[in-house]
Amino acid sequence: MNIEEIYQVYLQHPDVQTDTRKIKEGELFFALKGPNFNGNSFAQQAVDAGAARVIIDEAAYEIPGKTILVDDVLTTLQQLAAHHRDQFRFPVIAITGSNGKTTTKELIHAVLSSTYKTYTTTGNLNNHIGVPLTLLKIRDDAQMAVIEMGANHLLEIKGYCRVAKPTHGLITNVGKAHLEGFGSLEGVKKGKGELYDFLRERGDGTAFVMWDYDYLRAMSRGIATIVSYGTGEADVVGAAKGHTAFLEVNFIKPATTTIQTQLVGDYNLPNVLAATAIGDYFNIPMEKIKRAIEQYTPSNSRSQLLEKGSNKIILDAYNANPSSMKLAIENFADRAGSNKMLLLGAMAEMGAASVAEHESIVELIRRYKWQNVVLVGKPFAPYANEFNCFESSDKAAEWMKGHKPENTLLLIKGSRSTQMEKILEVL
Ligand code: ATP
Ligand code: MG
Image (cartoon, rainbow, N blue to C red):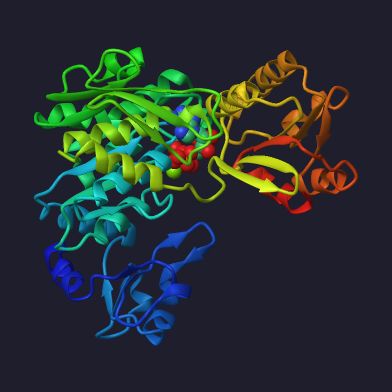
């Protein structure tokens, strides 16, 4: 079967599944291969569970009338998504960047959904499987699509752009994230810049650009339409009020108004500005934009403010890298109150930069002279005579049982792998 023929099958069975454990009646199952499994071997199981058809790439697993044999299941998934995308006649907005992609995507989705039928990435499904799956979820009633694209090495975003063919795009920022795969900050810039390259090359692309960041201004040069947002001179202008529990943004453009978010941390300001700029660009009145952003609450341990007993906790245990770690610590330092406890987990995927980057985080912490600092993970082990250092969040949680804070503001942040949220359980 060629892609056009498989597309006809997809139109009959548009619910795509890649996980046999979740398969439902009538779905189209793609038997992907992973490092530890061969999806092909689940073909029969998928059929038994009700899969309408199963896409496989090993003839040994053929089931007459049920399987579709292709050269490579992953390539077919991506080609099918690209083919589906070619039918769209509405804006496809791609988002990449080092930090804040999901938050920005969700804010944009909240804003656009107030007025348009908008499809977007579920959770954080932003990779070589998630991007095509997101596209294949889009149905006839769509008026907008917002696609998150994550990357940890060069040419990844370029590949996703070939599939999703964005008409509009946004790079949240370029920071020190995934240095292992990108090699250097220059590498990260180049990698994220592949989105701008795609928009530039298509001739009629539109980029939403954070105008405060000189590097984004420079990188976006040559793109047909640029919509700017920022704190200074830009199409959409707003500033954080500062020292508030939740971020409040005073807007001057497109209208004078204040948006009271439910987001913790002034580092969310660019995310709010971006969502406002996109809403305004697509003719959504500021009143509606404001309402949508004010109603949005983050989930999955991303910048949440929790209260437990007499303590307040900023839970940011979803991920961490040098850029987001630094901002979170500075934001924590800016907050009112003298009883503070800092709990940081190590930053993953740092490659050769790991030692130096953990050292600079420690240097930053030293500056604030906090009494209560808990550090988790091997990269922090060298600082054990200065701070409370633990190998794992389990060990830190154990220690916390005997050192429970009261009337304290806590910041909990770390890479996903350090599982810093476990500490919450003992509070
Ligand atoms: P991932 O690479 O895992 O997909 P992401 O780019 O989607 O991450 P989010 O999940 O939105 O990012 O946010 C993760 C964390 O990044 C937040 O909890 C916060 O600490 C930090 N962060 C969010 N927005 C920004 C921003 N604009 N600048 C810097 N750091 C940010
Ligand atoms: Mg994300």
